[in-house]
Length: 316
Image (cartoon, rainbow, N blue to C red; front, side, top):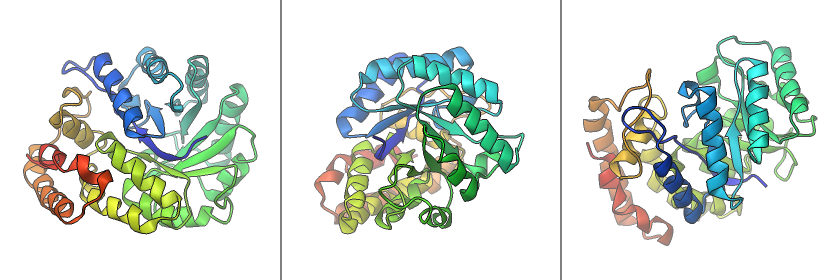
């Protein structure tokens, strides 16, 4: 049910920080028409940390209503308090989501037995598929492979998003070979093509897909079918974008780029701020040269829709 290119969707906002419901509806439709395989609502990229509970729940419900069962909707419903995670998960369940994404509790840094107990309680409290989310660089907490293996024995814990290097994905492969019921998803756009070519993952939960949904979907389709040459050709064209979307904290660069191509307004909530000018004029312009050059030398139908976008996305 869950595989391929799954977008970690931004939450569009007006310049005053209010949720921009019209833009959100348009983004959802764009992704479905572009071949995105699932929508991940209100995860890290969706600014879950700065939406209040009512907004968080409302964005998820709205997303489900707009998707109309055409692709799965996965709701970010994690937290560093188990009771709050359960409350958000209940809301996602009653809102019609297909699964929840459960981040490791951040800041309080529980031991592995605490992580197990946290996810076990969430899974047992709500009859909805759970995808674990390990992102040590943000949470200060690493869900180790042996803990993941223990959690995978719980019926409705169905997969994990690993925002970790290839080495971790390779550690997980003997525990969960391709074709297992328990699914592995990369949370790192820069390595997902290589990981899929190696048979390490079942899909990616992608930030880059916010800007290039059709290209990420095509790349993952090729990689998961063993068509590494075609997958690599697309991934090469996106390599600069993978990098530049993380020169500041996500989703700052992604939201700025999406505003540049007219998909959203410029709203973002404190303590995040609009994209720094030094990155716009230096690193982004450097990426533009690489990106445009790639498209001049490669002729792939999947890439044609990007040939006019790089100047808009990556120029200062």
